[in-house]
Length: 234
Image (tube, rainbow, N blue to C red; front, side):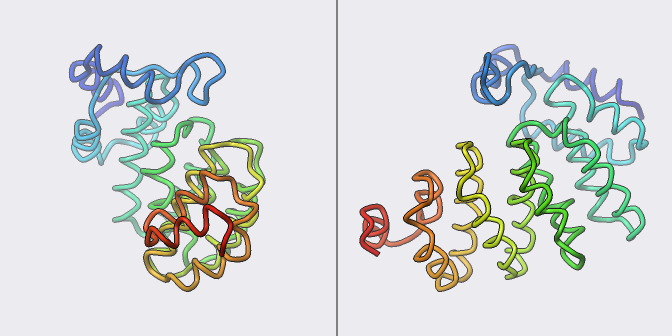
């Protein structure tokens, strides 16, 4: 099994039309967050299938994919790490976590973060110090900041909300719309499991939240309550 085999399969599965759509969808134009990224035009199902087929790929071959210019190669590498992490012993989990954080420069779009960060970073840190998340939250890299908050999705699923809320408070002043969406999404997930906790946080902070963050956070609230938040009446 080699990275070259994965690359050739992605290329054969790709669609020029889907590649062009992906370039627009993932904002690859000049000055946009995904500037310069390139695509084969493979589907999410195809990438997941290749990750399953090549889950025993050697580490150096996975890293070759992760450092590749094509978006889908990086996605397959991350999906392999996710699959491998779930079945690994503690030393191997530590190794995958460390490799992940050493390669954040290549985890450089929202989909790459979202399919991997909770399952690697969040899962690894669940029973450990969460200080690395706060370092990531203070990064100049949009993608490292997104990793910080999206990783807490793993904690949320275990009904552990404290770090999500603490990081959300730190990220209230973030300038990036993708961070507003990610933080609002995590707050919405907290609210789905513990409405009282989410509402206490929102009551304290919603007036200075970016509008997008607030809209995402209250998306599942009853319409009358949503409108009250949006009009500043809470």
